[in-house]
Image (cartoon, rainbow, N blue to C red; front, side, top):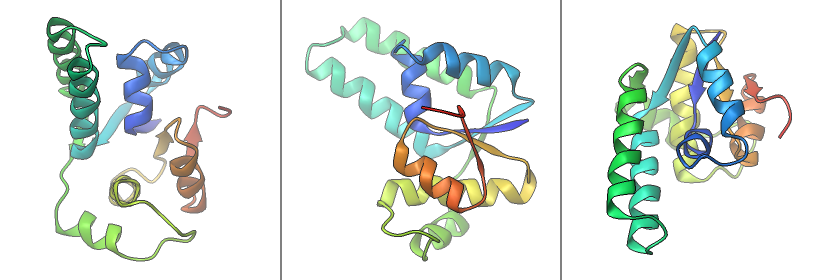
Length: 143
């Protein structure tokens, strides 16, 4: 199984939220993990936001960023380039789609050209619904 790791699932793991164990289980069971460059940006922004609000220390933020980079180094990272931007700018089977979600969904579409069996790992209900409309399996099965 090849898994597209969308930001909500990665953040759940990084922040050790209640569903983190599910994310770890899915990622460890995957033959390959794919993520957009956008996932890195969204994760970094979330970490910096928590640090700026004093909810985590700067040291904790640095540790979380290193944990992300260590994991992501093992993943196939999709660049946000012309093809992804073109697909993200076009219509989707179900509208409306938020801009950042459109980039994730377009990345999924590009990844499926290489990995047709790609499943989307996400806790974001909108991303899950749109991925399903694109014909993708979504993980975990129930949120």
